[in-house]
Picture (tube, rainbow, N blue to C red):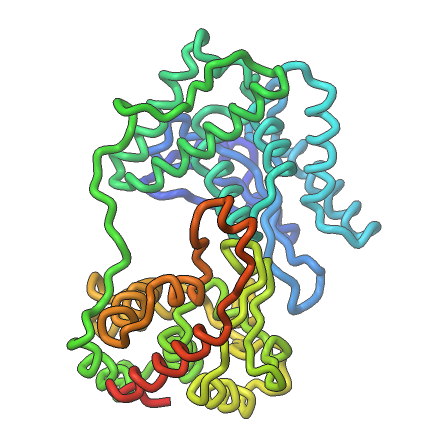
Length: 418
């Protein structure tokens, strides 16, 4: 049953974020922020599939804050706005979020003192991030920053002289008190970039209220991705091969390919069959899936090709090597499923998927005797300073292929079965 205005007003914040349907059959929801958020605000969102077909991605369209007054939406106004966006999307065939963004961009140009939400979206539009990074930033802005600082608050209200520094630190410290220290730092980084963008546009005066300082930095020790030592690999491979956890063949194959290639999981799980170049013996990873935003080449070894060929027998009629019909928003195995399987094996805190990069670099130098720069180049690390990289364009493919073959032989000797 849909909620009415009175019922929405009576909704109370709980420990976790809550979502309630407010319009039967039209996927309009009211979201109530948790008690931990200073504002405990309520806002409207619309949910739909785009493209509007069975396999379309489930998307969420932010309508605005619930309430009365300027820049707020009553239940009727939210219904009308959601109806407008859906009709526009159906007519144009475009993502309904695009209309909201275009309108905010136009508004941001008009405003001499835009609201925080427009400043944030204008910064996002000008940024050049990977899709996954952009999604993460949008999530933090919409769920961590805007509900607390107020999406319609003029950006100039956050200038240093207006108490903006105190507001920024209060938000950061509130996140830290929840135990999410790393997240607090990332949220501060986002605020710093949004405010720097606003200062550059003349929307607020310097200095930046979210600037990092020695006294404002979070006190915590950086924890690197856990990884096993060389002598512990045989036991790990034996347990991985035995698969007592009854993990899916897709996840096991993706894990084994990660061990053999030590590529980031975000680059590996969306792997496509047409990226495999058997003629030149390379797997080409496109720039948009690389942290460096440059295409990367992984020399093929016999075990790598064996895994790809086995996946071809299963998913050969699909675009993705690790295609999964169970994916909710992506047509391939979920990235976190690999770490989930390692946790089920009992390796939480001992070995992570990202930690296989450390295994390859450490054991490749100490056990196999390869120079660390060759391995780091194969890991797609930036080697040398900017001047060196601008003049030295050698890829060292011969040496990298030698290492990849030696690494494949070594992990198979340690017990990995493909």
